[in-house]
Figure 1 (cartoon, rainbow, N blue to C red):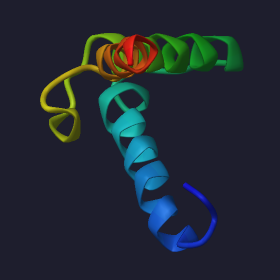
Figure 2 (cartoon, rainbow, N blue to C red):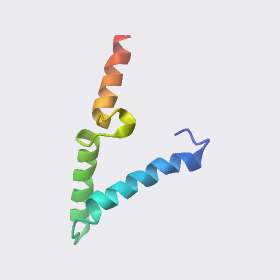
Figure 3 (spheres, helix red, strand yellow):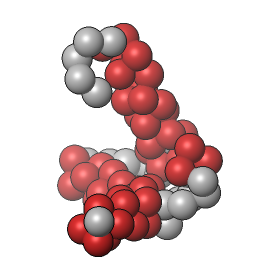
Amino acid sequence: MDGRGRYLDNIFIERLWRSLKQEAIYLEEISDGFQARRVIKDWMAFYNTERPHSALDRQTPDDAFFTTEQTQKAA
């Protein structure tokens, strides 16, 4: 996301928001901002640590990041 193809960068953010709404927000009855914050925080933790992503070879983002980071340090 370098700002050159901004419309292409937006695709990834829009997909993230769509997933958040469909998998968390619409399934909860949110009554106030505190509950909304908790639901979003819990879903983001799930998204990054437990949910496999097809673009990352079915790895979680955390697994992909930390594996790459360790490989770069070893080189």
